[in-house]
Amino acid sequence: MSHSAQVRPPADVFGRPLRSLRVSVTDRCNLRCRYCMPEEEYVWLPREELLTFEEITAVVALFTELGVEDVRLTGGEPLLRKDLPLLVQMLARNPRIKDLALTTNGVLLAEQARALREAGLHRVTISLDTLRPERFKALTRRDAHAQVLRGIEAARAAGFRRIKIDTVILRGTNEDELAGILEFGKQVSAEVRFIEYMDVGGATQWSMDKVFTRAEVLDHVSRRYGRVEPVYEDSSAPAERFLLPDGTVFGIIASTTTPFCRRCDRSRLTADGMWYLCLYAQQGHDLRKMLRGGAAKEEIRSTIVSVWQGRSDRGAEDRKALGARGTLVPIEQLRKDPHLEMHTRGG
Image (cartoon, rainbow, N blue to C red; front, side, top):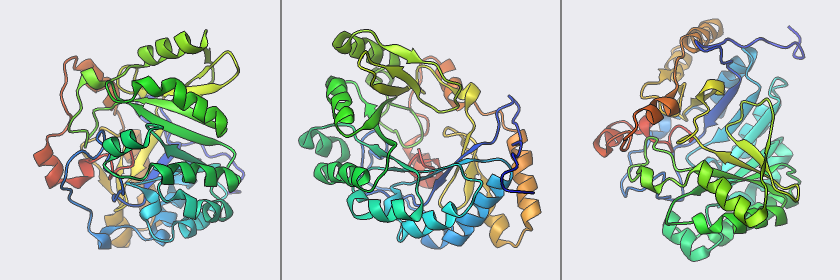
């Protein structure tokens, strides 16, 4: 088959195609954000169980042969994985990958941005929840705000054109910074995406009253800037996009109040080779075991197809339907199974 030939990806129970793969390269993180990793103690994946770069490249190749076109490297914090530009280089050789991206907290980006760009990374998304150093320290429990800002500058200097800034909005914490962050995005030519606080595994302090909703973001932004217009596009991206009167585009990811499960084509591979069909999924599929057990490529490929064809996950919609809801996974359970943590499966 020629690489240019379009592969029709398998579809799940709801007709959603297998098109997008998020690949976690490490479960470790150098921040301790209150909405993701609020606890003091964590159980880490054993290092010898992490997939090697060769194994990651081989598994990604199987997914792309089935129709996956978008690959995003995540963590934990992916820049903590040693020699990450080498993995990017290996993946960039795969002609079926149309979009090779990275999500990072930006702390280590200044040192690595150029190497990542030269290795063939297409674009980068950087998390930034506040423009205030003291608030950053309270939210992440680390004093690294200046490094993140340097990382954003370095990404621009390295020639990344489509930079995104992800901002989780927490009521009572940073909802007063929406306009400031939008203005910052304009300054650095980055598209800002506001994210509702999600009750996924690891968010042990989540409660609905801390969720600053999509409706409130739109209200807040339109009062400051005037009429906000939706951007209509046929996309499976998690963000709905909007236009300010001056032409600035921003996004909102509203998984908590307005789930987008019906168009979700994403699945997640953890750093140790567990494949999850939904960010909320409690059970994964062990691809590392097949890989290291010497399973033939065809066998792994057909497993991926049959698992995906049986996928009926609608985690965010199911959570919303509960009405009153608390945290997803109790802390004792998280300690027993680190795979349930969001930082393990590349939130």
